[in-house]
Length: 231
Image (cartoon, rainbow, N blue to C red; front, side, top):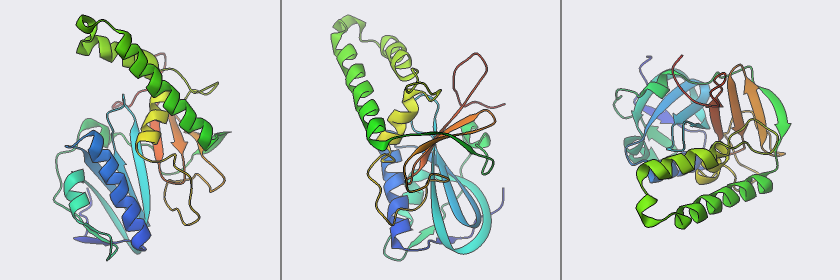
């Protein structure tokens, strides 16, 4: 991989704050999370995998200076190195990346296939979270084993959003990472989703829920549902 510069200069303090917020949310769900950083020109893409059944989260930020870089680092160390007031981020030492970091979605070639409503997405996330909690609480205490809970989670989160192929676990991940909050005028990042609302995109075997705050990506596997795995 290309060696990253010791420090990245973000375009402004807002970009630095949004980057830090994304890392905080990712670490809330996985304290040992790692992220892969890819920098091309003046765009930084930060990839992470929250523990929601094989989805990738992507947050993009604008940089003040162009460069070409690629590395996998500790999310916690990277968060500690973000200076919001100075709009900079010092890149920590690289770590051995997990398997998902070697199978990333493409940067280009995305085609928008559906318009999505942010409020309906939030409602869908809230509804499926409530369903999972209710069904968990309805289980006899002796049946609340890890195996039973994993099976229930797979059943609930693997269902699709409406008539789309997007699994509800992707909607849950977007909600948990703050990607579905109301858009402010100056919001940046999130890839190809315009300010008029979130959308569903496709590129080859990939599906992407894109919003102004970030994206959640899943990979289709023939006959096996939607997963992220090496090919």
